[in-house]
Figure 1: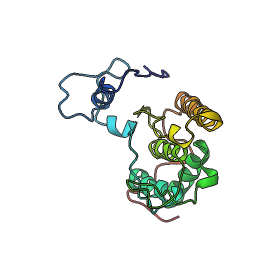
Figure 2 (figure 1 turned 135 degrees about the horizontal axis):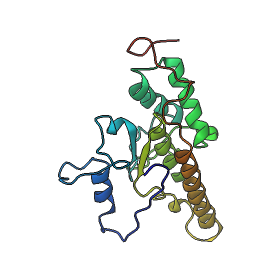
Figure 3 (figure 1 turned 180 degrees about the vertical axis):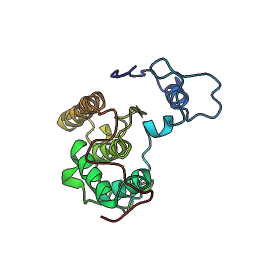
Figure 4 (figure 1 turned 30 degrees about the vertical axis):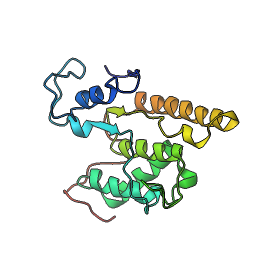
Length: 197
């Protein structure tokens, strides 16, 4: 239902991700039905929803800003100008509080060859990527996973735990205050395709 924040809690292997994949219609084997506000989802369901996977998908050589710009052009470029996409990137960087590392290389990756963003910053970047298009529904698969690795135990662990809770609280605020459609700062482009200026 609109304005609700729902959490799936269970032990490892309980099927939380599978259930979320089904609800998000990302599971091909799903044979049930879902309803959004009591109605079957329309064809625009995928453009109205965001999905933050447990394992982030980043190009380690890009900066946070470059990553968001790439996704902004791909998701919004058909309707908005390049300048409008840039503006939305700046808005998201502020929304998820990535100002200090906006021009930092993402780094990390499977073999962590390049040092870059912290676990919390990577998670905020993944969430910011999905917030670019103002989704009406956002699914987060284990949104705090990887954040506790930064500080195991002691003060470091408490600080990272506080960051996790702050992130979730702020995300709840963002989701319950999202406009029903794109804001006036992003008016539709008069013609399709990405335009400069």
